[in-house]
Image (cartoon, rainbow, N blue to C red; front, top):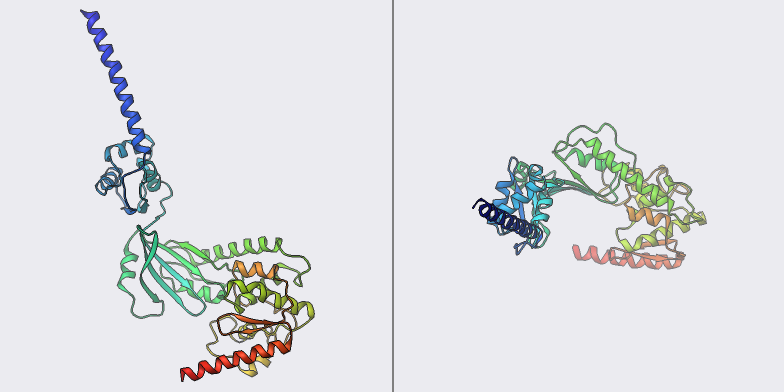
Length: 386
């Protein structure tokens, strides 16, 4: 009798172990399998939330098949206590494994709201955007200039949300003074800027911010990135260039940056200045004259006067020979690269062509014809606007 009971118990144990093993295998397959979510969603994990609450929300939204398996998997992988607050993009068909990794890894929000501060040459703009999970593209919900008196309500609402992301974008061609002014106007940042970095030494790019970040630290990050770019680009330079140091490369790149906003023209513009330097010609570029007037503190806001073209300043390349003593703006990576790898041309002149680009010329006679065409375009535009 006892032997029969023991045999039955052993049989039940073996069956139970097999069933448990089968459940584990099934649970693992559910954990790694493609999920049921039909379109991407933005999951908001509030501060103080827990895996039980999050798993139930995911199940209710149709992102996972079982909240219980999700919680058990998080426990088994020791990730239950690593849950991060924020807004996380859950992609179409994401597995439980992928979702757990997303909400427990870096803690950086991957969807939701973003406030971007754009420091440009003529304005400092604030944009409030939200990521559309369906298209994975940001949708602008508010935009304003930092000098505006009426601030959109959406900005204040997003500033109150703990998971809002922040970034500052610096345009190519802005001056260091403009960047410093822009950072001073960004209210989530803290600290005063005691010293404006040297002209040209800030990398135009986009930088992540967090409320409370120190302005000087943000400037240092921009300087560090620009120095890395300078070092790398200088190492890749062509031979036989009429520039002999990274400092001269930076100056030339800043002039290229201010002369054209057309990406495919940078190599040609660079070739003009390189050819002029090699031939001992003055560079004669208006942006250097403007910098001599403004010292980089804002825009001129009008055309240059003849007296300013003749006035001697350290930067006026109609007066001085060669390069000015400092950069005239902060050049982007593409302009740095153009300075050390100009196109091979015989161009020594260029003038606006009315399309946003320039007409290039090898001789003064050809250049004068291009100038005459540009004057006609200007006259037509002036007459049509009156």
